[in-house]
Image 1 (tube, rainbow, N blue to C red):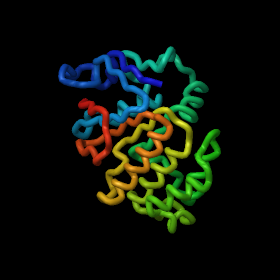
Image 2: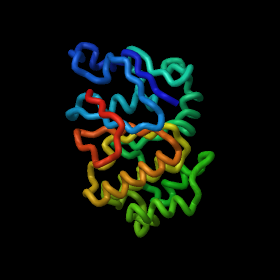
Image 3: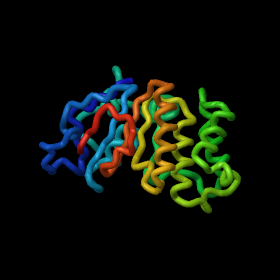
Image 4: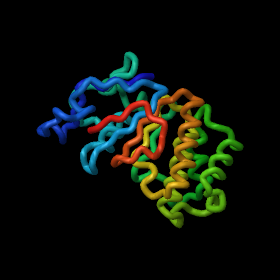
Length: 213
């Protein structure tokens, strides 16, 4: 499922000079199976781009097209299906349920069809070093620990695209390396595309292209 951005401009950026942008008001092809890094200073639209690709922002001119589907034409039930089967996202705010334990947060996601096995889920938890926390409510975890849980949660469902909004901001280099390798292994296995927003760090990911907003 390739994604095509056709002259997309978020409404808040209509009056900006976007002539130097590599994304806004451009014709952009994002090929499924490839990895892209989106960079810009803070406040220049990285989260906006990911949120409109995920369908939770609809305030933009232009169009996003996947196959014969136009984002502007999709209805609420179609978006629900799309988010369960084709697009997964790690939000900057994570969107975990703090009153639930780590395992409970993951098992809510793993109820979706074609999810990874219980044993693979445990392997991910052990790999990212949070297994000892999993029985505790997420409200008592550090932000970096919750980031690792949110990454695992996003990998549990089926997807063609994985969207990551500054997912490593509270991780040290060792944990970034582990999380990045897990993401790359899972996406390569599924031939899924990756779009990761960053202030500029490439996190030593194997990237196919960089998009500057």
